[in-house]
Length: 243
Image (cartoon, rainbow, N blue to C red; front, top):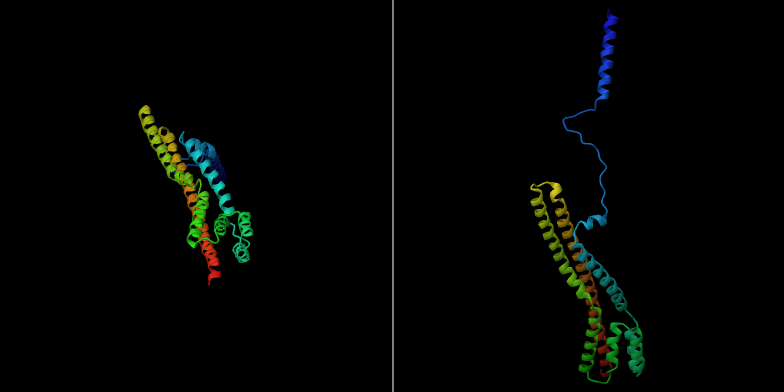
């Protein structure tokens, strides 16, 4: 009798075990079928910003071109020749003004071209020499600042283009809601994409252009201060013989 009861118990336990194994485990939280996340490329994401991303892309390319071109020009102009002023001083003291002018032209930097204007007017009044050097220096600095205004303007208008894209995205959202007659994520998702991506694109382009403009302007200002110091040292050289 005991063996019969144990046999029935084993049979029931086996049946329950098999039933539990066949059924999926459930909890108080409804299970969600696992799906592989849908990846989106950067180009696809940007394209969701709408047509306003085209002028933003053009502004970005323009800003990068101007930055690279100005970096090359300003870097070349900022090279300092430590022997320039001592050499000019020696040549002036020896009366070799033509050699001093040739040296300045061969160095071919804003600083040396400004000094060349001063050397060419040795013998004139200090006021005339200073004015000639001031004009030459201002001309060279204006040449270095060429196209920097493009970066300044780009930094200002790019966020505005992004704001225009935001407005277009909001209009698109309300238009889709009107057509669908209901509000759900599928109805508003395209407009939200356009709204957020265009705003982000405008800010990114604006920040790049603004940072480039400020950095390059700071480098030009630094060179301008150095040119002023060189001008003062040159005028001191001309005043030495009269002491």
